[in-house]
Structure formats: C-alpha cells, structure tokens
Image 1: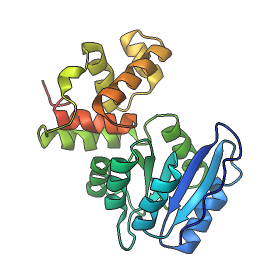
Image 2: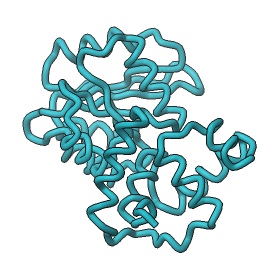
Image 3: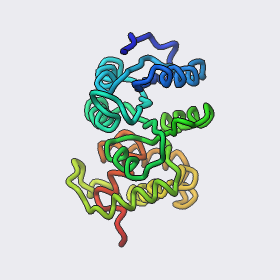
Image 4: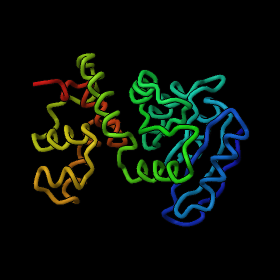
Length: 227
C-alpha cells in the first residue's frame, strides 16, 4: 500500500522509495535503510502503479524497484518513472543476475541492481554509489551488457552524438568500460573535478540522469561500436 509523504529530516538528505509487492521485503529494506546517515525512506509501494504515483507526488531521489510486481512490473514502472521523473534514479532489486533481464533494465533506465540476498553493506554501498552518480554495475558485467547493446546497432535518440565534443566522447567511452572518475582522470590526464564537469555536460546533452544511462545511450548511438 502507499505510504504518506513525510517531510525531509534536514537539508541534504536523499529521499528513497521502496517498491515491492511483499510486505516483508519492504520492511527488510526499510530496516536496512532507516537510520543511515543522509538517507530517508519517504514512501513504499506494493506495485508498479503505486510506485509511479508516488514518484509523481514525492519526486524521490532514488527508487529500489522489485522486478516482479502486479499491475505494472519493475521494467515497465522504471521506464514510466524515467519518462516522467528523469531526476529519479532506479535500482532494480532482483533474485538472479540474469544478463538478459539486466540488459532490459538498463534500456528502461535503471542505474544498477542489487540482489535480494545482498547484505546491508552491499545495499547501502550500491545506493550511495548511485546517489553520487557512480556506476552500480560490476565493470565486467557492464562492459558485456553494453557490447550487446552496441551490436544491436544505432537507434533513433533524442540527442545526436554530434553534440558531444571529442573529449566528452573519450570520457564516455571510459565510463562505458566501468572506469571510476579517478581512473578516467589518470587515463586522460585530467583532474577529478574536470572529469565530473565533463560527465555533467554529457548527461545533460544526452538527456539522461546518471552515468549508467549515459553509457547505455552511447551504445544506442553507436559510439561504442568497434572502430
């Protein structure tokens, strides 16, 4: 069932939404997240439709989205949320690391995933990574999924690739390889703050909300295809 919105505890708190059709699963995630510095669970939803409705009303920073739910499943709900609330990041919560499903999740706009059997530390780490704008995918898995996307060929995208500068393309290719900002800076002889600035420009130009989806859009634009 939907929970009513609560006011933020203080400035700088990231507002989270939990979407799962099992009461115990939602309670388990809430117990892990409640009390964590800088995080607040502001709502819960028992299906995808409720998750979308709550996102429209609460505009959370991040949603932990179950894969299989009634009325609207996790993929469809994620796609709808990213269309209507592009500033909201989505982390898929799944039982298995299924590459086919994860590929579809990335296409829908998910920033990453956590396994249902993950520890509290793993879940909190993933949440904080996504909130910081970092990738929440293992580099090897991300590279494999993006290669599959690239082989599907370019798609019609709202933002043409020509908008990106040569340096932004270099940064984007390294992002797609799962590199951190520090690693990108070392590779391109740039400061971390400069890398962050390039990423902000890339994300804005491609019309996405995080680095994971920027890499997905790059694959869809054909930027990651072999030379």
